Image (tube, rainbow, N blue to C red):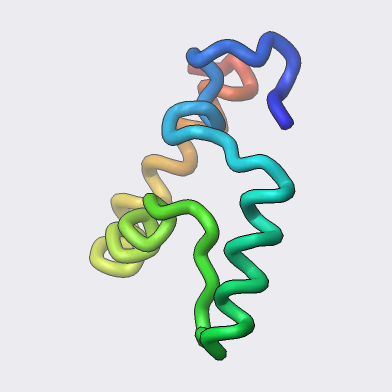
Length: 73
């Protein structure tokens, strides 16, 4: 689902938005494999690794993203 405007310029669209069916399929496969962590979108693991590698940098990025989304940047 896309936000109003739905264009590629929206932050949530940078790496693609998965359909509910795609997410459900990934969850079912993860459960079948008895995976501890199920990440439906392939880029999410990279995001998690960057976040845990430098948490202060990640927080700064989230603050900038929030400001941009709220029109404060």
